[in-house]
Image (tube, rainbow, N blue to C red; front, side, top):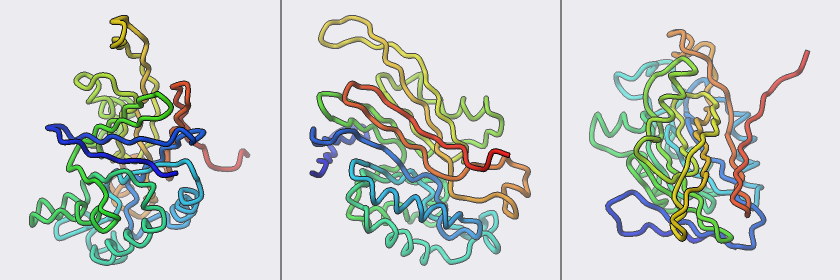
Length: 267
């Protein structure tokens, strides 16, 4: 049973995803800040997670940006920061995504893909989306409605912006859209390489009755697949990031469960 994906004619960057009611749950696990081609890419962890993505039968994903390192002239670490040139990174990304491309809903660019657009007007993220089964592509935001078992889960995705280093600053950056986007269930970004999952109290009008209801939402920043020591972040004393995925599981009663994991031995 496959999902149905529709990009409606709209002035807004919208996507409507209909999931078969036969699914017992829906897991959402996007790829943010993979940085394929970087010399510090956490390859073993990434490939292990890719195998998990491929094996999960009720999972949806999307490309949240910075899938490739794409260091170009003038980029930090252009001489030492990437192992292969962007052309080879592009091909590697297509090959890795190919086995589970039917689980990908859409693609958005990160600041690393935007380097090519800024320097020469070539949108490498858009062309990567075309190579990956003609994924729906949006140049900044995307507003997704996931319809399943009578529920309408609303997801707002963006790559993320800013260079906040403190926990408070990072949370403020993640919440920038809260004042002007109403009714969303998940605000999902990356970029900061830090795992943040905040549960935020919200209210909304029940359209059928006109009564107020509680509508809690998640504000999420996904981690990355970029190791720390020996790279640009460590040289600039930026806070170390955490490796991996953040996963949200949608339930038939409207509940959402978020998963992050702490790695390591307890000594």
